[in-house]
Image (cartoon, rainbow, N blue to C red; front, side):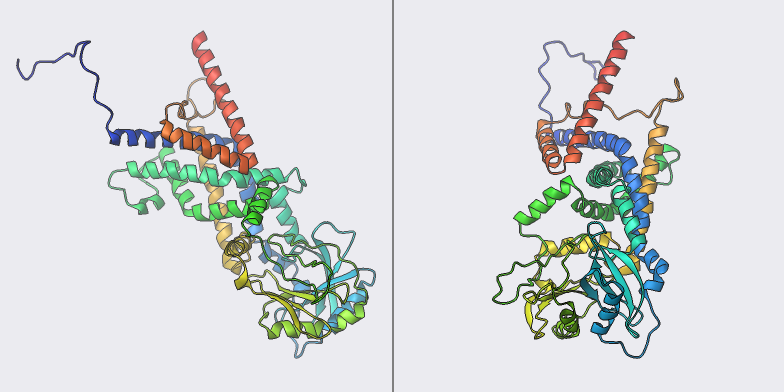
Length: 490
């Protein structure tokens, strides 16, 4: 038989040898890519509008502290003087303007051009809202008043932007939009990373990790759009994951699960005790990671003048033991309670030390250094401060703003790719085609089972992901059914 003769295998030929291990690994990788593509597509198409809204409002929210400093500079700043008046005198002047409200706290002017905030609880205000009278520390004269919100003492403009970003001013129903966006953002981002990594690996001579950050500009049309979509996504990926994680802590359903998990693992934010030594009164000092900070409508101090007279002693005692950043001094309602002096969440402040001080003697009754916080509580505090644009001031805000612009561009490019994927014949209203179906059925059980288990776990812990994932599955099944029906009838 010549070497050019064609050999035709017959029906009795032995079965092909087992699939090589390398081929099975390749099949598993292809299955993972197909699953990531399917998930990225459906979540991108249906959830991206919510993420787009969160990105637009988030860009505004990122720079809101700077906007606040410009818009409210008449309340926040004064011309520097020679000497400041006693803190008690400043508080007394503010109380005279609000004699019908309960004195809650005072935040001494942190800088030479800042005003002092004397804070009152007002039953007419909402949750976590208080009323502040701003006092010139050099003259002890009030310069104005405003409602403040939460532990960061946000003024109305920043509060309005905050609520726009959080719930679109729709209340609890509106919070579902932001929870859906935060819950899906990390899933979409990681699925996109898998797809982009495989695409970069497929390029010739471009297996360096640096190419993950470099779009291939040699292509045109949909390919170029995809390259920019992937590269920008990688640029902003670390920030996106951090914002998604911290955003979920504010959410309704996932946030409850996160809070419960932190409590079980002792990762919650500790609080200084305001109970006096030997007192049986309950400790009412509250911590708080988020905007609200746990402020309640405290009762009027039983002897407000006596409490006011002790403020300077308390402030000096706290500074003497190292609490030197901008602070808020909570005014106790009764002598059985100590003053709580806690450092405020301010731009460029990385620690939140706190002490409790006996107003009568100035002695420290309890101390909570930031170094004593659990590690996860510290990381949570830093993450939330970063999310709010307060961790390291203006650079923090600009970084978040640029990241949100990048996220908006990624979403727009994603929809553009979907549009360009649509059929060019037939109805002009045709939509882009979805990736091929059957990815899960064609995936190795060794990959499919962990994926299903992970989906069930994530769906339970982050309920809106689980519910929307079921909705995506229902849509996928319906699309497949309609496709088979059309194929049968044709």
